[in-house]
Image (cartoon, rainbow, N blue to C red; front, side):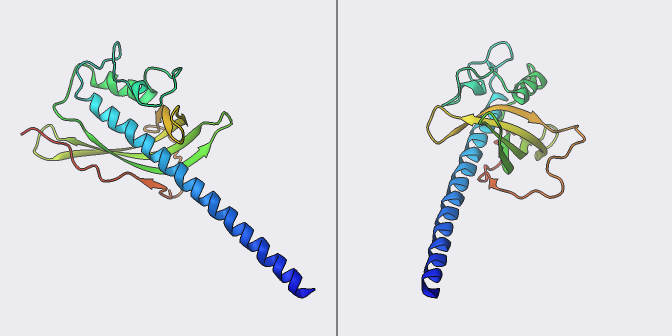
Length: 187
């Protein structure tokens, strides 16, 4: 009798390990798909800094044009609109380079994902030969892409200037973008 109970316990443990391994693999793939979508979106925003044809009134290359985007998504995300408004007619000679750190991903009731991310933006310094670096914490909403297994950014909101810190007390990094290098600064 004890051997049968022991065999059942071993079988249950094996099943639990297989299920946990499958869940961990699924989570890993989802986090990487989220990170890749955010990285692609940020690279697109970086390119808008040197695109004189992209304005709030008309932009053929808004983030809505990214592959797999949902057709009913707004032309610009909140952050993209802010960027273009802030940039105005000032088009830079070099695109900034953005790095991404994904800290948290949660599923919402409507099936979308909300990611809390750290963004690091490296730009060519205006008054020297060096670089300037800024950071931001953002809540980025993603939806399943029309391309199977991928996600697209549907909204992007900055936490800058807000008193609520979504990363309190300490963030655990789930995804880090590959090193994108430095901007190509004209000298």
